[in-house]
Image (cartoon, rainbow, N blue to C red):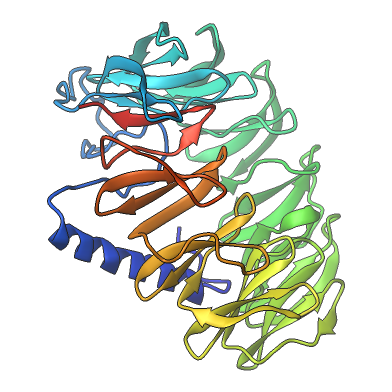
Length: 403
């Protein structure tokens, strides 16, 4: 769902400019690549109505096979796979025709391909579905821990997992026992002993006993450090971690937060606000967006710079876009090309790339005319992948089509 209740101007510009750039690259090059999210085990192109039980031979064998490369670009696993997911907790999902299973880092298929869909392992468990589109969970030995009987399932967080049947969500424990039977229309995972739930068109917060700890609102979303952003009558405010009011719903928008400072829209400008509500002197701007725990992108006259939590200018507005910091670096766009900078606004790489991705495990994926490459934290190119659809590294390996 597209979020319309926060500072989305800069984010929307990122999406629109990236799409335009992709179209230009498509005209300049003879290759094609997938821009869908790197979510493991997603079946692309599935147009079968959900009400129908899909056939087990719904997907033909793919002409393009997938495997894994290491951080030198060398093929590490060259299995005969139609699709693969990222490695998490030592296992990766794989698809052969319509069935998904799991393999280990030695390329051994340790859980037989048998599922309609298979997701990443988390805390020793993975969500899977059968060909009736029911969901459950297995452990790393392939044993069914949560029966494959639910129409929806989230992940275990703080000992509780949300499951859906008959259009309603409840919470179970690892013994598949119902611990909160609220029959909710929507839920979020537990964090710090609290969960956001939805009944009809209203949201509130519950504790581990299923008891409401907040009023109801048109929208609630979690901020960092346990705070919550709330929406009421098209205005926004903040709740404390215990669900009580911190700031009335009086602002036109409120940004994501580190739990200490937020950016709020006041009249035509954005102002940094130190919680519980003290305004911080903020430079003139057209928009402010959260970058990480103490960095903010601020836009003025179509250019973007960086502020710190005290409203000091770290980098004067000079780039079209600056993305959130991940592992110490952010991407910036200048003259339709992308590069990287550090938290002090210092350049790691010039704007050389058609597209950039976040740093993961010390490497960042970039795209240029030569293809997909990977740069290190010194900004040096380590290798160019053999295929334009190579992905990010996870646990030392990156999934990639094989030539």
